[in-house]
Image 1 (spheres, one colour):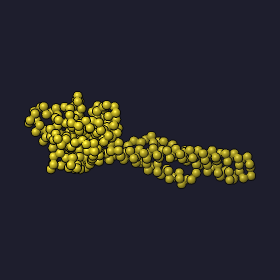
Image 2 (cartoon, rainbow, N blue to C red):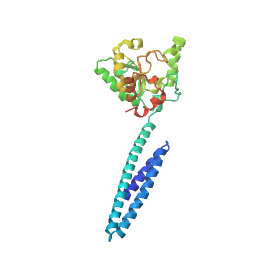
Image 3 (tube, helix red, strand yellow):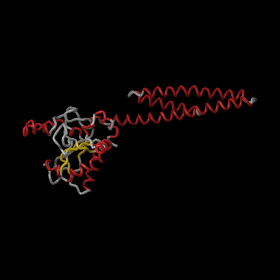
Length: 297
């Protein structure tokens, strides 16, 4: 067994353990320590047997055979340990990549807002991008979305166009202040009834930049007509393929039925919800959190 290979693997393992130690990989640490001890003792035994073979085995066929057998078995043990270390390195490397992925993904993006979790006035997506104006219903009023979902949104809008469906975007990202202003205007017009269809500032999914209100060129801002539009039918059948789900279906406990309001939750979670006939707010937060790592896959 090449001692330099062993040392190299130990150095790699130590580096990985340092990287993941802060997040609680105590088991991996203990396991590697045991492997390291096994390496040390087995390699020492192989060295001892090799010396004995060279010193005492030259003139004694029986000793030669015995030592050779022991060296063979010991070498097999070293190789087995090497394979075990390689396996542990692979597993820990995968864990490190997962942790790196999670560390760069905003955990707020899969939180259950709408009267449950709260976004403060300082929250803003890391990046915002203006959507293609040909899908923006109100010309001159730029619609921004979280930059990370833009490719998924564009793919969906292009697919709808290819299918001959009139699908436009009425609104996307709204800041805490924007939502406050909007809610105040609704309260003036509808009083407490505004609470049935509009979130208070800090509870709106729009502040995440991953929720959008869709409409059609034909219906414009009259969202009441969206339910019976071909666009609604198309979204119901296809939106999950692009990572989007309906936030407020009929009979939900938060707001009135909003067939126009869709939220990006990633293809994995959207597909799961579609296949199970469930909705986003049906799940416990801890179950939803398990999909954070695959949010932008």
